[in-house]
Image (tube, rainbow, N blue to C red; front, side, top):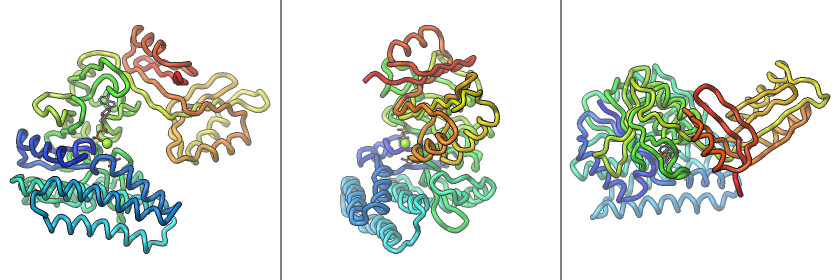
Length: 420
Ligand code: ADP
Ligand code: ASP
Ligand code: MG
């Protein structure tokens, strides 16, 4: 089997879906499991629905109807004659979500989030599966919730590998081409879970691992993995080959073209990952596989925006020692902060964090009981893998004020207040 993943950008409209057909006609689709994301910005729109459900009940219905309309428009553009079956299936899914929201008494934001936001992938995969069947790409629609088994840690669920492997292996028996969903799974209590934003790449890797697939291809709106995000850097270079280890590092530091959890399962079974352009499927793209660390050997640039830099010092001018550090980390964990970089000196301890769950205010309150805290909000973290002198100079000249700098053998990092 091979596994393909088409992300939100590739299925943002009817033209995108038609383009997938073109890609599949080029690659062939026998023994292929295709994972798709929600269409375009649907996940963001559904996040808004959840937000309004908790904040302003009148607005949530209006918002969900907007998402429904958008999908009906795409269906209208894809199917020449009105297709009652698909219209009915899509409406049924929306009605289920609305029914859930109207009747649930859950106050658990993350639980509600997963039941609502997951509908984006379900609808997208149903539309695409129908369209492909109509166009001669005979396929079976596979409900990922029957395959991807997780715990009930909503919004960032952890995989139950053994159950998942068994479920996937059983699901594919006797069929050849599958269309399923990225991002979603289910917990043993029957509720839908999600794997974290941008988690569809990870879903593709999970399917591939369970199937012992011979490859995974993620189709993107870029030629492959470049040595920097083309939206942020000009003159980027295509990386032809990256080792698993290097890809893990790049994703970890924030190269958002691959979800960080994707590589490890593939590495375990040495399944190659190809990152290719859905616009130019004939091009080779990037191979992540056993072999050279990086080809070509060039510095790679990664930027993470919306970071917060905290500088902690003790109130009585004493040193920050192990006991304080363990206390600080306990609080960071408690308030679900993602720690991106740390640096300690004799009297201060600096931490660059990402305030993923909007709990910064509470964290600061807790920290300020014990420490003097200096806060630099809205800063950016620049990382250069395989840096050299020109790369460092390039970043230093390009960015604004550098607040913190750190270098290891292969990686240089800068916390920066961007130029206004
Ligand atoms: P999808 O969700 O459609 O699968 P993403 O938007 O998650 O795709 O990933 C593709 C985007 O990743 C590109 O449009 C690009 O802006 C961004 N990106 C970030 N870092 C890199 C990089 N090093 N190489 C290529 N693209 C990158
Ligand atoms: N649709 C989800 C998101 O936008 C998952 C994904 O696209 O990978 O985060
Ligand atoms: Mg995405």
